[in-house]
Length: 147
Image 1 (spheres, one colour):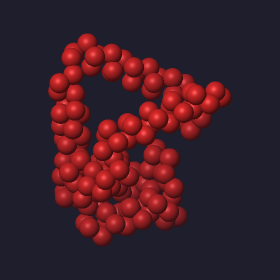
Image 2 (cartoon, helix red, strand yellow):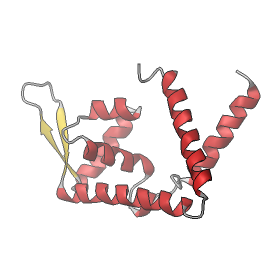
Image 3 (tube, one colour):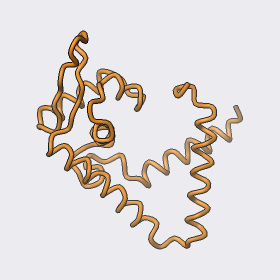
């Protein structure tokens, strides 16, 4: 792989994560980090998911997800229910407080992007969205994790 391409992609990634403001503790005005927010939101999107499925979907380490789930459960944002007949597999469900936090993350994410793009000309915003769609399509084409 061309070193300049690697540098270019890494430079973009560094810029984009800063632009999204994901490196701070209070992601999207919440008390959660970005990974914690993603785990919470994944459960919100699919009530009854289990920890192994979260690890696969988010490509996260099992022990890290386990620590996040323990914290969310301790803070009463989720409950776990044993799957009958399984060998310890537990389905994850958000409590009402967890659902409210997930909704807040979703709404704040929409507000964040809207605010960041509010002064952008429509044509530039359209080109940006088209470029992002191309990036996603190209990466998915070669993504071994999705196979």
